[in-house]
Image (cartoon, rainbow, N blue to C red; front, side):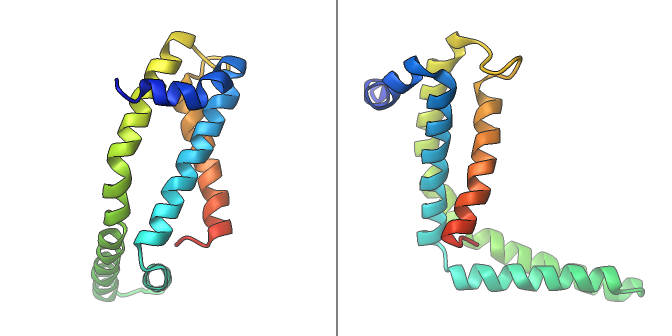
Length: 144
């Protein structure tokens, strides 16, 4: 892989010193870049209003007793959810290929190391770290 040398230059020493620390660092950087892409490539005000409307529809569905009313609310909620997903599709397209490249490098770098924490391999550790970082970064950057 052409970029293997590039990633090894940037992260190689950290991974050699601490495989777990290196993976957590990579997870933080990728999560930060992903969150920034979502913040810059989406209309944050529109995303926020769609989220609020979805929450309101869900609340109204819980309160509704009439099946027909509930179906109407579900239809409206699904329309709003589709709008939300279409707005978030652009950042997904922008980050997809670079993330595939990085994950391919991570697989090559971490697969020979075996489990990192007990029976947990690199992908599980990455996912847990990424979810935690995502929650924090999105709160700090106010990404919707």
